[in-house]
Length: 295
Image 1: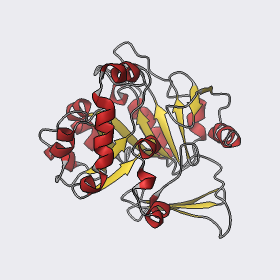
Image 2: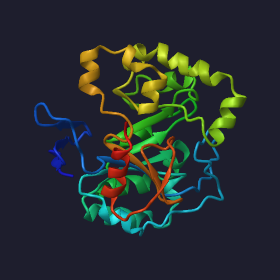
Image 3: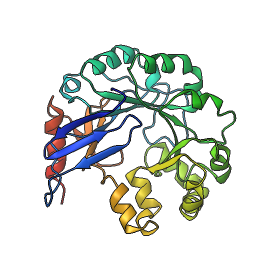
């Protein structure tokens, strides 16, 4: 992607993505947005992960399988679609590098999310891939107080991910005032996450703490974003000026985005929704089926 960003048309929506990742949408006056394909796809490429995080809603572990990254569905992804590549531990997939090269040829914008431990182990590789233009953004999952944050500043488009209900106040304080971009994810009561929730009374208390400290947190990070689940759990719409909400809210799950579990051959609007079996090799077909079931 060139330094001045890209602009493309998706149905009746004109989409502008700036180099820093900021996105703008434009639709004809008086019309409702009707995209023909997802702007962003949360793509699970492996169920393998040696971290065995106790709250993992995907149940990823050291016995997990890798997805087929030659699946014909991937060839149908339009140019400038953003992929959020994850797992499991995506760095463990043996075909990841060749997949990223193919996506670059398709002009697909690849971002990758890794656990902090895997980020530290693979810094050189991730930096090389950014230089080669294979990945654009890097998400780093942080669940415990952060030690040395210096390595995080070596990446121009890095976002720290943390989970409301898992990260405690000390975790947030350890990341504050370090010029970091922060993404707060909602708590997923699925997989091992369900057992973690049942066994930890702190989950609800920590979610409430984040909700109560949103305004204060925003003063200590370069930017703060939320997934749709966090928006609901933290009741953000009630805490934000309506004009600001209209300007920055990017829509609910499935409206412009979707989730694809390539390991199990399933898709849906988000990783927490009821999953459906992939029935077509065209991403537009899958996305259209999600649009048709909306109320």
